[in-house]
Image 1 (tube, rainbow, N blue to C red):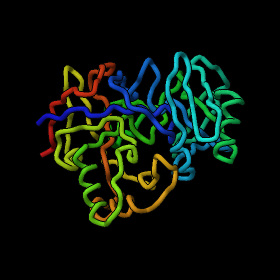
Image 2 (image 1 turned 45 degrees about the vertical axis):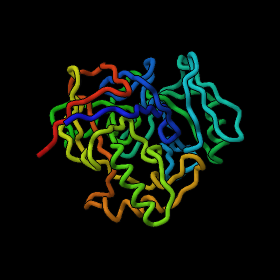
Image 3 (image 1 turned 30 degrees about the vertical axis):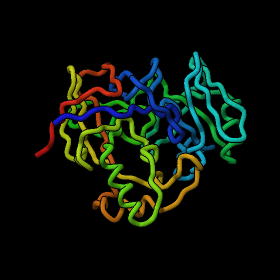
Length: 277
C-alpha cells in the first residue's frame, strides 16, 4: 500500500496556530524549517506550567510565521511581536504534563505580549538546546525518541479519509464541516482508507522509517474553532460516538523516527505503508 503526503504542518509555539509548508527536514525531534523545530516554544503560566487551548481557546488565534531571523507572532487587537531566533535568556524549568523540561526565557516584551492577549500572567520560553526529552519507553521500546514541547511524541499523523468521514457524520447531524486544523497534525496522508492510520506499522521512503507507536487520544482541543478561538463540544461529542476506546477518544496516531533522521519531506512524497495485520 502507498500513501502520499498531502500536508506538512509546523506549530512553532505549542498551543498556537501553526502553518503549512511545502517541504521540511525531519530530525528525530520532529519537523524543522531552517533549523527551527515543531513545538520549539511554549507559553507557561506564573507557575511555569504549560498553557494550551484546553484552558485558553483564544490561543488558536495566535498566528506564527518565520520572517528572516525571527518568529513573527500576531493576534487580533495586538501589535506584531518579533521573537529573534538568536535571543538569549535565563534557563528555567517548566512543566509539560508530568515532565520537567529545561527552557530558555524570551524576554519581558514577549512575556507582556502573551500576558496581555491571554488576560493572565504568561511567559514565552524556548526549548533549551542543551536539553533532551524522550518519549516513554513503554511505547518506543529500545528506541530513544526525543521531542520538544509536543505532548508526548515527535510526530502526529492523520489521514484525509478520516477527516472526510468525520465531516460526513457532522453533515448528518446538521453541523458544519471542519478542517484538519482542528486536529493539529504534522503529517496528513492521502491514500489510506478512513482510520487505517490506526493500523500502520511503518512508513518508509528512501531510507526513512517512521513508526506509529500509539493512537492519539483527543482532549477538548478539536472542539476549538481555529478561526474564531471559541470552543464547543460538537466535534468531541461526535468523535466519542464512534471513536471512543477504553483509553480515550482517538483521532490520528503518534509516531517516532526510527531510521533516516534528517531526511527531507515534501508535499507529494509517497510512502510505502506497512500495516499491522
